[in-house]
Length: 397
Image 1: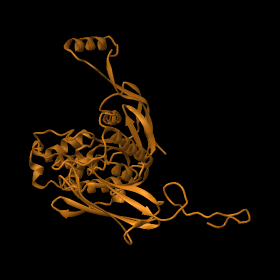
Image 2: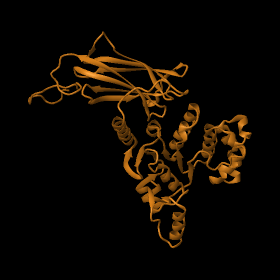
Image 3: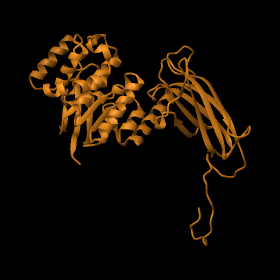
Image 4: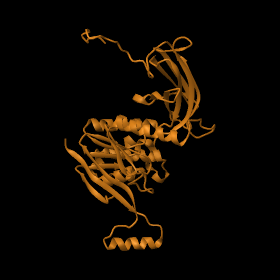
């Protein structure tokens, strides 16, 4: 496969200046060809390769160095160390409104932004109607974009990027802004872009978008590559890291009433049959969440043993599932687990609400249950098994 992007031990330092005299000394050192004496290492020793048709998600906490990495690939800034080789046309959506003039209308900014992305005047003329249709801004297209909302700016920026059809598309949190229908429109376009052989570099706090759109993922932490590999493997470890971090920083608890975050209004945990939970029976979890806006929260349901040992967990945005709207910014869900393969004992069912991006946990309710039954097996779950003697030909299950 053709390597469109190659990074070798890439690093980026920023000078740390705390006084006017420090700025003067910095300029003097740079003029003499010396490096800054005090520097913040935003990126250090990052290496990766991206072939044509591949998709890579960049994840990490705020300040980890993700945006710095994307700017280096896009050619916006130069690395302090290492080498960067880009073989192809790059289209980058890095910062909200980058390439736009606030006093120009949306229509005039199409020409400006498209030119900055490398389109010729003839290409812009041929693509203008397509860009306008994708942005779907109506009469607002004639207004200065300084009066646009953040979602409207993203509409215009993404619409211009779709016209470019670059060899490598770089996006930084573009799908985190804008209404849900436009987000779906962007996701569908990106999926079509990838199906047509496009190459994607996506930075996002949404693990759902990373898992949906990217085959590989890079976890950046404190400027260094902590993990690189299959997108599901990397995002799983990243979410586990945040879960452990949250458990250390604060105990599980409720969000205060009136908090501007998704809250759990009600949770019900019942057996699927009868009045008691039985091994090999079933379990039904239902709940109602409230949201501070019109976006559906994400539900996370987990089961832990009485001693706190995690047994199982799943989140509602798996496979694109969304909580059902109930009106008045309330959303409901139902989860069935059948069969319930838990061994007899006491367990806690934890229901968590997360923000729409599926990363920040905002509220928790715990329900304790007892699973009845008779078993001399050990552990947490019962796996189907059969003992056999040496005379058995091994073909049995």
